[in-house]
Length: 554
Image 1 (cartoon, rainbow, N blue to C red):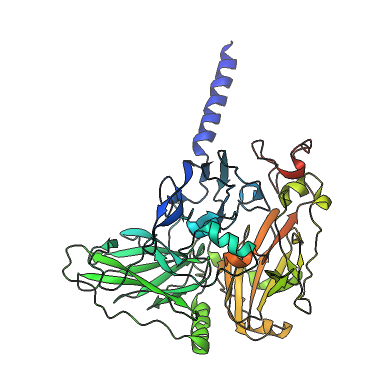
Image 2 (image 1 turned 90 degrees about the vertical axis):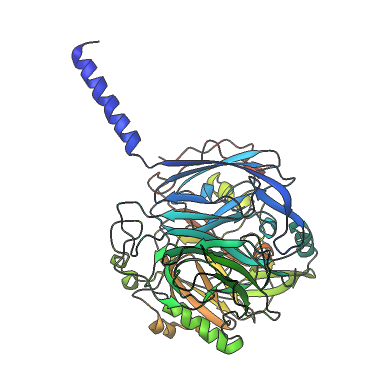
């Protein structure tokens, strides 16, 4: 090899090496999903463990990291995990919903590969198959800002995950059989915090975490329950909200906070009280039969048990709804802080974008063939044997589902059509989604693949004139929204992420029995600029299993 060739070779090698080093880091995990005995409410039952843990191991990463999770399913039934709030840019293949990918069969494994692209914040993962979430398989996913991008508060002394929510003493198989028989699973048995529950005065209660006097701590809190909104508070301490579902917020102080099913937030708590024990309190909201639990926060070198006098919960009924709506409105986007990118959040002027489509949806409770069903605008979703995304990619969608069975307006009457519910969304359109809740129970909705601006919640029915009440300046960009009884909520988003994305009730009973849909966002360019091709390692099932693979995107 001549000297010039050697120089070119070395230069190329150094260039490629530099590129590899400069690439975004990859974090690899290997998880074994098994059954094991757990007792969140003190009653031993079969739970779903990840690497022997409940809650499962946390994913602790930084914006733009590549995440690789090799999941071994050692259960006796198919299993899938979704990464709620992670947008999976161009990559619904990894979203972990039954409409996007095949389940991991018993005794098999699947390796998820995704990037937390341009995101920061507090999220969690959970199983989307059957009613597995009722037995575990849940864990936190924390996405930190990159070191060069400042956060709008001082670094806390420590941060702690708090996964709380309602819990049933019946296992997931029993609960699923109840739903399959056409009945409701009824009210939960209690509330758990990080897999445990306790009562005031329990001398054997282990501390949830430990504070040192004078220091400030960050609590990342998610409601991972199945049904109930929860209010949480820290005895004797105020909480400063700094992040809601991936957005830095205006930093207000609160004595207590409502957290609805599927929602996450981060709060700062300063250990500024007399060093002793204090209670972290979680109680149900808007439930006919109130539930509550406590956990101990212990000051290092403290002396004294927590006081039995707990901080009071917020009001209930009509006053409680007004209180909760007021708190929702107090959450504001921090327009001057950076998020995942080094530009202020407020540089995105969502309020000046023209709406191209309004989708108004209403949840319903009804029956079909004598069995309980939940629906949206007259359609009650049922999963197909072939994942919807695979059917679409292989060009056989017409053999699996019909687009746009559900209309953009609620239908008269209470009948539902039980079928896969797939709605076409135009790529890069700016859409408004109105959620109307005509029922007497609170709802929570989640949208995969996107964040949206939660611009309004009000009692009554929505009409176009209500747009004058929208927050078009600093509404929080998030992925869930609650809708109070006989109320409505409005969100706005750009459909700039091609894929098959799940819009669902976060109440698992309702989602399992049909209160969900899939939003199909297709880029006609079939370009890698807009969406990744089917991964070579992707599992195939249903009618596409024996079909030749389509040409990849270019």
